[in-house]
Image 1 (cartoon, rainbow, N blue to C red):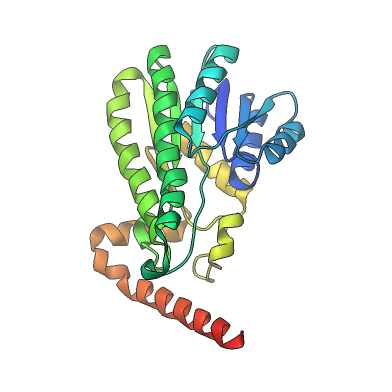
Image 2 (image 1 turned 135 degrees about the horizontal axis):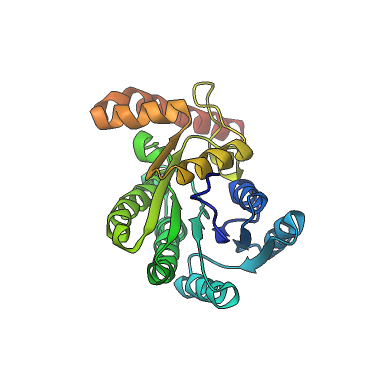
Length: 265
């Protein structure tokens, strides 16, 4: 990481496992003190213990706005500042829109969208006062691909990107940098819902963490990777119809798999 990006104190939500744990470890290696925050406090503690003295664990349910605001304020109280807020926690669900319940929608949007909004606002209030800081919000390639069968996830991530772009513009005057990350497939637990194809391979969490933090260090407001995710990003912006054949193929295969599974049972 560049000399310009040396966060002293960082919070990583969803830090107990997967990409969050990889981000926390990489930040600690760069000298930051990392608060590993997760709803699964045991996994957060395991990650913090693995990192060592540069980390501490905290339990937080990002769907509860008060909990995440309290976490930010407690971090400021203990450490005097907050340099990086990495809103990484996320969940997904799979199914066609007619099959999904209101509870499915609420659960995904509460974690993926409201959790990011609450974490960003809490961190922004501290960073604006201190005149510096970085807020990093996890979007997804789904904002370009608009994957059928994942409507709540797609809606939440599109909301994250829109919110992040507005916040980035407003935060400039306060010296706060805000970045949206839209990665392709990363080998995390979310992939249990969708096995990547040979055209969209999943990359290791360590590689994803490296790319994210290097992008933030370079001041990028949008970080899209790997190559196939960037292609999807540009094609969707050139014309939303260009990716429709791929979307229809994804839906066709998903329906076939479900029919086969139903037949086997």
